[in-house]
Length: 190
Image 1 (tube, rainbow, N blue to C red):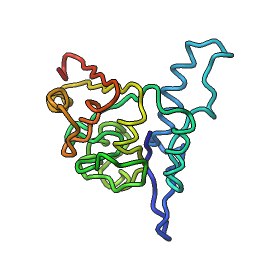
Image 2: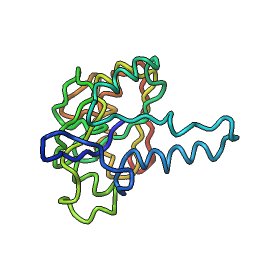
Image 3: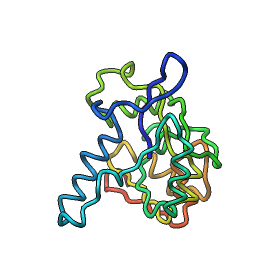
């Protein structure tokens, strides 16, 4: 649902290479898809071409793809520990936002030092990402599951679980506006 992007000298954007240790598409392919497929017989495995991600060159095409597929059955979400970002939507993200290229908040970039421990410093974390928007998550999902683990997510759990509507100051509160939203926490976060 998101990935880092580079800005080209001409001002256009392109997704980071799958060879980058911090590629979210690479993570989805190597960790999630491989884990799911390991438990399925060959004919039932998910094909790599069915793993979709937004393209920084044409982010709106991702919305069209989602619509053509009838929406998202399950969005698996996480919240930034320090700023409540969800996907790459940082504080201030508009409720009606759709898939787009966006500047990444400094706190989001800092949080991602933990997500991708091979980053040696904040200077290595890209400044831009392509991401589904808040509306994409809330309005196009049948089920959204917010997973919060570790003591670093305690504030996120408290903020999200007490929300009654979307709060742009903590974008992960979008889960309360999803058709069906669920929060899953471990004992450290809860």
